Length: 580
Image (tube, rainbow, N blue to C red):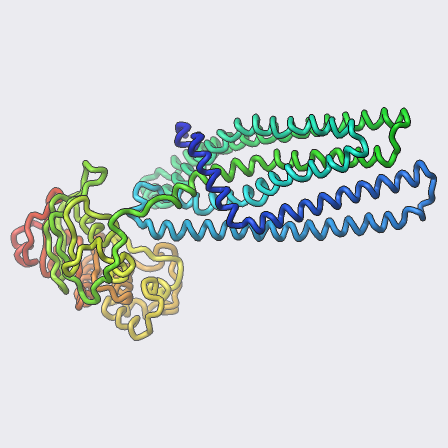
């Protein structure tokens, strides 16, 4: 897999800072939960101090003062009570941590969904589906450790060592100095090693996004790969890419383990020095066993928050890498021309294209200076060779993108002034390969209008000539369909898509090659259904099939992105040689 530049992998200080600022802003929204987590952890730290003091005192009584076991039974009971308290607080801490994680993920994922819906196809132009899905799913999940592990540990690393140092210094100030001067080495080496692994982690995130997009493309094109005998070759490529990802993952883990080893090394050396100092002081009789044992028990606890912070630094890198994808998507401005407020007309609209031009990337494809009228309640077909601009014109009409020049009038109102939700509620787009989800026939019919009653459903099925094959299905409307409508033929799916357009009560229906790839009988049924569905609606059909063009009223021919001529259907078919 090719490597991206530092900019593409996110190794940009300015971009990193903005991602970190976004993460802190999100943390402010769960400030209460985070404060609760830090507070509970601090209480657990206090219980650790009490447990160490009680255990050291009990050893002092038994070993030095020679008291019997019965004399320390109250201390043992108190120790068990403190242990039970720690367990209870730890359980509450885990519950609060899970609640904080769920709240963060739910809020961010909900905002991402709403943002993607608001951006629409125009705002997401150029974004690949695979990386986008990866951001919404795995990207949001990788925010969780940042908020539930790194941020709390960052606070605890500032609170608990200071708290422990305050109780250690009065007992043995020399050991306190050792702890004080050795502690900074742990975060120092954590940062030094973390900077190296941070770049590796961002690069790994880029690999994962590209791999997700590659795999999605392969899954969507799997039937074609099998037909052309290329499935095994692509499987080999997937295996190679996966192996590269595994090797890169091991490199990240190697650095993470090196960081953990370094933290453990300094913590171990510091604890050993404290043990040596206490040993000499006990030897010379300058320190009691109880005080020395208390300091020795507290030394590992002093380093524990710093070690945990170092171990959770990987969570920070995960969170920052994910935020670098999520924050720009949430901050992306909405495309211009999609913020109108005028309600869409209730009846079949009259459409007028006035000098409409649009070029993909400013140079290729698209349409140029298109003037075209679609009278209200009419059926108009767009005909022309592939690449002539038919689909582009249809995308402009339904509002998936906006013209670079010219305008589209709907009953005299500029399309940009119409409220997007109101306009979309009046639209029905039937592509060449209609999309169907894994669900029942009824569920797929009601996607555009979930509250439709049985009378409307039956009327729609009859208008689309779909009632006959629906009645032959094992469970009728409740028959489950597979992914992309598996279980029905191409002609049946086209008629079911027409019925769905009827059910949603759209007043403008746009169809892209509704009969392409169908046999003669299926094409006839679809064309007859099209005429019935078109009653009381304005319909635009993209097609080059003779039978389909004979079913419409007018045909507008497109040549090189321009409207050549607009003729009645019979006149157009008599003048032109249309391939069947």
